[in-house]
Length: 401
Image 1 (cartoon, rainbow, N blue to C red):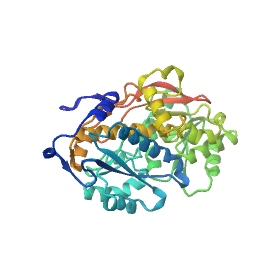
Image 2: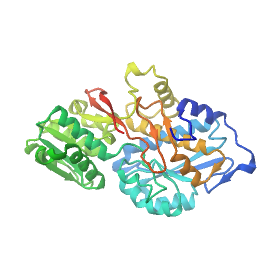
Image 3: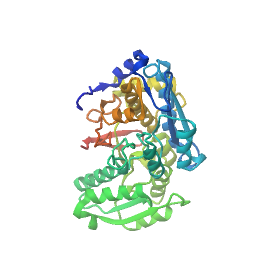
Image 4: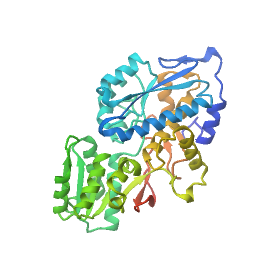
C-alpha cells in the first residue's frame, strides 16, 4: 500500500462520489477544463471504420460517467466527456482540438499504440495528462521520459511471454507459428514469445508471418503458417484481423492449439463473426470476473456491472468484453478525480494517478491497480482463459508481478 493513500473498494468509491461536497472556495484550484461545476475529459476513439467495434469502450465510459453524474458527480462536479472519432482526423490534430479548443483537463483512454505515441510528445510538452491509454504497449510505462502519459493493462510483451511459457509447460515439443502485425504492437507480442521461449525459440518457432493493416486479406499468411507444420498458432491479430485469421485457419482444415490476444476476445465483436465453432478451444487471457457465468452472478460487483449495463448502457451486448474494459477504466478515472478533491490541476491529477492502490470489484481476486511515480503500469496481472464454443473459462491462476 502506498503511504498516505488508503486502499478503497469501488463500492466505497461510489458512495464517496455521490455524497461528497466541495470544500470552501478558498481551497479550490483549477486548470483549464475544471471549475466549480464541471470536469472536462477528452477522448479519441474508433467509432467508425475498421476499428468501429472498439467504440464500445468509449460508449461504456460515457455511460459510466452518466451514472456518476446522476449520483451527484465527482465532489459535486459533473464530468463532461468529449469523445472524438479517430477517423475524423489525424491523432495530433484531434489532440490539439481537445486541449486548445475544447479545453479539456486531461485525455483519457485514447485508442491505439501508434496514435498515442503520435500525441504523447505534444501532451507531455503541454503537461496534459494522457491517462489509461487504450493500448497495452510497454512504451506507455516510461515515467522518466514521459511523466504525463500512463498505460493501463498488462503489456503485449507479457501476454506473449505467458503464452510461450504455457506452451513450454504443456506441449514442450510444439512447433509454433506466429502471426503478428507489421507494427510496434505486433513486434512487441513477438518479442514476448521469444522472451517466454528463451533458448527454445530458435527450434520451437517454425514460421513467423506478418500482416499489414492495409492488407485486404490474410489467407496467404495463414497458408504459409499451415504449410510450416506448426501445431501451435500464436494468432496475434487484433480485432477484425483476429476474426479473419480464426475463420481462415479453420476453413483451411488447420486446427492447431491457438492463442489470441486479450484485445480480440470479445465474443460479440470478434468471435461471433468468426463462428463460435471455429473459435472453440482458443486460449487468451483476461482480468475480469466471469460476469456471464451463473456461478459468479451472485457476486456484488458482477451484479453492479450488469445493473449498470441494463440502466446506463442498454444497447451494449453483455457478451462484449470491450464494454467491461471501458467500465474498468472509467471506474479508475473517477477514483483519481475523486481523490483530487478541490485541487483540480493537471499536476494533481497526475499525482493521484501515480499513487493508486485500488481494488476494482469486477477484477478477479489477485488482480489490482497499483501505481507509483516510477511505475506507470496500473494492472500487471492476468489469467489464462479458454473458449469452449459458448463462453470463456479460467484456465489457471493469476499470472504477473
